Amino acid sequence: MSNIHPKTSPIYQTSVFAFEDLNALETYFSEPGQSYMYTRYGNPNTDELAGKINALEQGVGAVVTSSGMSAILAAALAICKAGDHILCAEEIYGGSSALLSQELTRIGIEVTYVPMEEIYDLRQHVRPETKMLLAETMSNPLIQVLDVERLANAAKQQGIKLVIDNTFATPVLTQPLLLGADLVIHSITKYISGHSDVTAGVVVCSTESDLQRVLKVMMTYGLNLSPFEGWLAARGLKTLRLRMKQHSSNALTIANYLQQHPKVEKVWYPGLEEHPQHELAKTQGRGAFGGMLSFRIKDEAEAVNRFMRALKNIPFAPSLAGVDSSISYPAGTSHRSLSNELREKQGITAGVIRFSVGIEEAEELIADLEQALAEV
Ligand SMILES: Cc1ncc(COP(=O)(O)O)c(C=O)c1O
Image 1 (spheres, rainbow, N blue to C red):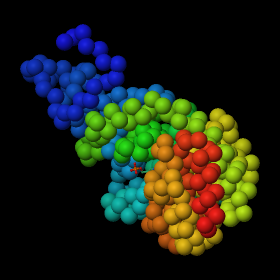
Image 2 (tube, protein in one colour):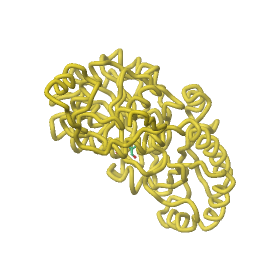
Image 3 (cartoon, rainbow, N blue to C red):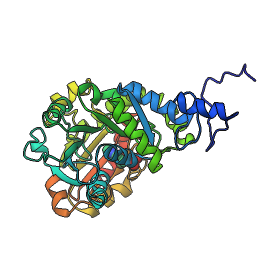
Image 4 (tube, rainbow, N blue to C red):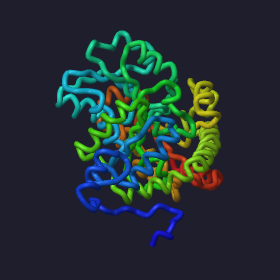
């Protein structure tokens, strides 16, 4: 059977690997990466996925995990212990802030949220026990763009690690490690896999010591990804570049359309010249702005309901970044766990809708939006 050379990797759907004898077991320990023992420690499918994402992000190595949340957890536990302190950008995915303030605080790790206007000057927030800053390249849901290089310099000055959630931008637009970040995480669930059929995450490291820590946390806490999901995500990843081009071009067309619509009060998209970080986004994203935008209609839940019900081909599905478009409602889903006060402060009001623009024909999407906005 040695003449079988599949073009696509087979799926190693096994929890364990057999050894020929004790010598083979010794080789497993003395020559890491040459053979496999137990899927929780490593599997060819998850290693293939990790290797491909690492190459795109240009790290020293990557560890894939069971979800984006477990990737953030692995990064935080790799760096911090009880008594340490984490800084986190105030505008961040609600699940990330819930993990930090509701769970990590229970095991003695403290967290402080840094307002976006103070994010490049960390002095007033850093303590002797501060170990890391968590921030998103493009924030969720209002798509603020952070200057990763400037942030990396600020973090270095304070002697803390910068962990960047690059889920919205993807390495096609921005490679945070090349701009000075220490670790990059992704919810692979989103653009990396791209087809809304996988839940997975990844931590990409810039140093061997961080990589070994993240690996240890992944193995010991059992945060590993399943072989089949690793295989599916690696398949999706093959079209990432193509997809990002189409997502970005569609989103720009739709942002322009929404902006001139009388029923739309505001549009957040970094590709629009009015966006406060438009120039930064253009340089940092190599001229592309991604597929995520948010817009506000009348600040009433019932207006949003009428709009959602009227859409024919764009479902309300509280996730993002699939090839098919979908809308979400940050105030009721991703940012539900925030206090009303914080949501209002961030501008996530009752009429804000997040639009994950897919790779369909832009005209078809606009036709659907047009008839649904008429119902508002
Ligand atoms: C920016 C961002 N980071 C992390 C996550 C968490 O990822 P997952 O749902 O794969 O655990 C999400 C989920 O929506 C996200 O939007």
